[in-house]
Image (cartoon, rainbow, N blue to C red; front, top):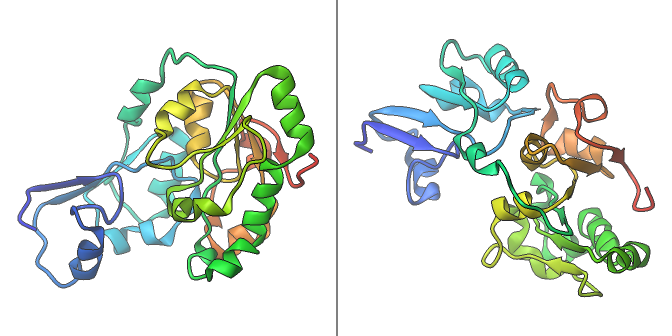
Length: 243
């Protein structure tokens, strides 16, 4: 509370206990400047990041289109700076191996779902369809590749709902796998909307966007911003498992 500078990769992360911070941030006389480093390139319209909600003193951006969008849309004046992300310095000269990373983002509208509802959801069934696709598994084994499936942090607690039927497909948990290492060593990214594809694009590698629920995602999770996957993405956009 008394810190002169509060620097975080998350908008509510200025405390070892985020829940404490969120609960009391509007009730205590906060001192010091608040600096938002971000943990991914912002590409969607996120009202919770508007100035009147954050009162940030510094908002770091990692890409020029992102900077233009945030500075012009999120109601900031001169608090937004285009510096690039320091963590990208670790993405240079990365050695890859025969590995594909599948890393979908989370779904806000599934956070309140029961275990039964989540297990039966389109999200879980669609991704299990990929992980257990016999044609894909045969191709992986033929070419000597591994597919590593790493769910978003918010979905990691339900990682047991995803399963593999072959050693060529690995279900990766938060405790034993490092996200940046997976991004660096993988040759290809399979995602839906996760901003980690910017890291992959920065390394001049390809992404495939599996967007089977785009309309629902944009209406119930994050509203679309400036980024158009069809014209600005780093690979193909597909809607079906067969594609």
